[in-house]
Structure formats: structure tokens, C-alpha cells
Length: 264
Image (cartoon, rainbow, N blue to C red; front, side, top):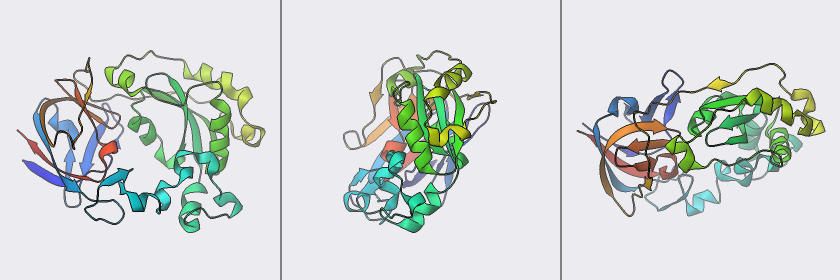
């Protein structure tokens, strides 16, 4: 069976284990069903997620010109503390920015390779944690806009990490942590503007990824250098496909690439 389309990040459903889907324009694929099967990924071309042209992808699924124009790639997306919609100030597209920034946001702790702090829209829980490959996570505060979440994250980064070591995450070299204790320890460092939004009584969420075998040595698949790859799929974690020969493929970092996927 052959599927072809533009890669976007895998869609997920939380369960035991998590279910993963590759969604194309006219078809979709339940990636869990490919476990223990030989899969061939072939690079076909590019299709910018904004202009839909066959132009080399620059970042985040966009060609270079679109990356510097679309609101989905503005600085506040990566750095929430730069959000300005709450003061009615436009960055690239105020209507879009209000729609995204002026909704409930969560500051959370997640354990993917180590305990880290992060920000996401409330509607993206637990999707965001799944995408990061976190096996456990907990909410710290729920605030009414992205700016408050951003300044809270910045304040907490002095006391807890904000990055995931993707190699440690994919090898599953992780330790369980008591995230409730971490939450309570960090409470004192929440900025005054967000203190009232602290979540007192919640428990951590545990996530189960569909992995039959974790890799020991990691080789990242680069479609431009290796336009065709065949391997036995052994797991899915975060936004990565894990193969028996320790090759790993980051679907999200290849958004905007047109691929053909065949299953033997």
C-alpha cells in the first residue's frame, strides 16, 4: 500500500497506548498499524504549508518568504512572553494573534528527558505533552492569555529546565519524578501577576507511547541527503518514528516535505 502527501505533524489520540495518525489531503494513515512492518519513506518534493508552492522549506513547514510573513511563525509563537494581543498591539496579524493569544493557556511541567517547564494553549493538553515525548506531566497555572503564561515560564526557567534532550527521550533513558513536589516547590517563583492562577490540587498525567523497541544509537533520517529509506518500524514517540536499525525520523521537523510512504 502506498500513501503520498505533504507531511504535517502527526495527529494523536491519548490512549493505552497513544494512537498516531498521518493526515494527508485525501487520506490518512494510522501509524500504529505499521509497527513491526517494513516502511519505505521516499522524498518527492516540497509544498509550503502557506503558499502551497514547491519551494524549499525553510522552517516550521514554510518557505523562507512565508516564514517571515505568516503570523504562525512570529517570534511570540516560540517566545510567549512577547505576546502583545492583550494590549491590542499587532505583530503580524492582530485578528489571528487575538484568536490564539487571548484564550486560556497552561504553564506545565513535563518529563521527557528531564523535568522542564513549558507553555501551551489549554486546548492542546495533553497533545503538547505527547508531541514532546513526555511520559508524565502536570499543570502549574492556568492563565487567561499567552502573555501571562510566557512571563511565568520565563520566571520558572531560572529554577527548572526548558529544553528536552531528544536523544535521551528517544532512548527512554528517563527517570520518574514527583511532579506534584516540583509544582509545589516552584510555586514561590511564580510572578505576582500569575499567582492567583496557581493550580493547587491536581495530579500528574501519565502517557504511554507505542514502542516495541527503543533505539540504542540514534541516526537521524535526513530526506535531502537520503531521499529513500526503508526500515522496520519499532515505535513512535513524540513526533518521531523509531526504526529497528536505530534510524529515527522527526515528522514535525519535516513538515512541508512531500513524501511517498509504502508499507510492505
